Length: 583
Image (cartoon, rainbow, N blue to C red):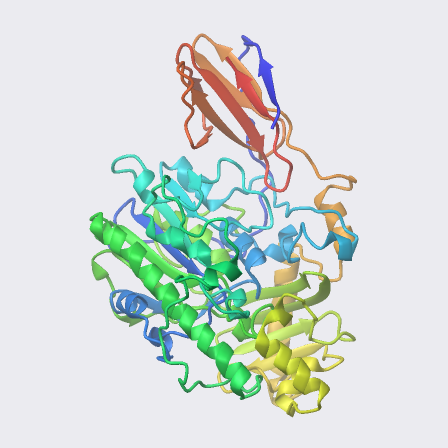
């Protein structure tokens, strides 16, 4: 990136303040914390991918997961966590910002890909100017924030987002006694783990290296196919002749059973990796000052799970272990949405959720009343577009299809690499699928759907026309209307028009303006005329040593003699500014 050298300007300038708050889902009021937690606890997130409730703490004992079972025995299980989308990038946008993806331009998977198919320019989600990633807010509180190492937020994270985001990011790289927020992402359970040939995903070796940036991966630079021919095969965590409960929407044959074995075996491998990170935490003497979250980025990886907004695509298990095993071995049945994570992190650190956040805190000082509803959306997946919205209470799910003339099934090429998906298409062509399995392949869909998720967990029996359910249908439909208006979501808006809206009618992606540096004596101030831009800086000492992390600018900087200042400004969804240097 080009740099621009500036001379000193002896003028004082004030930081631009944020304005224009968004509507939020729930008002926040301070309340007494329900748990006796440390004032500034460490927070560890263990995030796996494409994860339904396939583990014994949630009733499925197919594969032994000793580390997750121990975590659940010492913590609290949350069976009613729901993603905002059935796919990862929109869901991660919700987690990172506390905003609904379909309201900030983050719901099309992916915003910067498949341009040759869509004819659209690459773009990013553009949330309101006051929105920052939750990790940046925590960094402003003095937390050391690391991400190891998947991002995928539907926008490029500013340099101020993390102290470190890399395969080596780890709490062990922080300053002594500095509180941390550390995220570890586990990818073995991703749907691609069902592809053939089956083997180890080499990326996972990073999880055992304890933040050692000098570690050289054994298989780095080799292809996955070559890795699978080495001794690095995925260990077997359950017998291949294990009996599986096959969901009724999938064919019960050897192809599906093979994929089910891969699914559970990947979970077993992920569990061992979770155990390695937990052992590092315990070895460091940090276990009882750390709140540990385990959860998935949405529901399961199988066909008619991922990308759909049935519970099979949205519901993912969560376990939270609190210091000193508070509330150990209990269950919390409250409804929780991914938009609740950001306000909850602030609440756990004693800070009120930001006014723009559309979620609500479910723990900590600012814990809100429990949710009545969760909401979800589905739009474009790769090269194929639909428009579906959903709202769910503790029992019923309401789905509104904005393109009823279009079938459910989208021929996403990536998904069709799964053997079970290939088998479904083969049996469909041969006329061998039963009525339940054919539902997904209907050429049209109803405008409205209503499911009793308690009696019909696979959401196969549409009750929308049932006279006995009309009051519930009206209630959930009205709630959907309220939600869509609140978050400014128009499901009928073409993606091309959405991009114009995000870019304020311009033809090109907006660019963050260059930061302005002013100095007087040995104090430096930095401003940026782009409203809401985050400002990051580094100070290179007189010997040329440059810190790895960008600091978050919050006020005047004292610049040591002989040092050099590097500054970059970046508003989420915009191109970042160039790096500005001051000698």
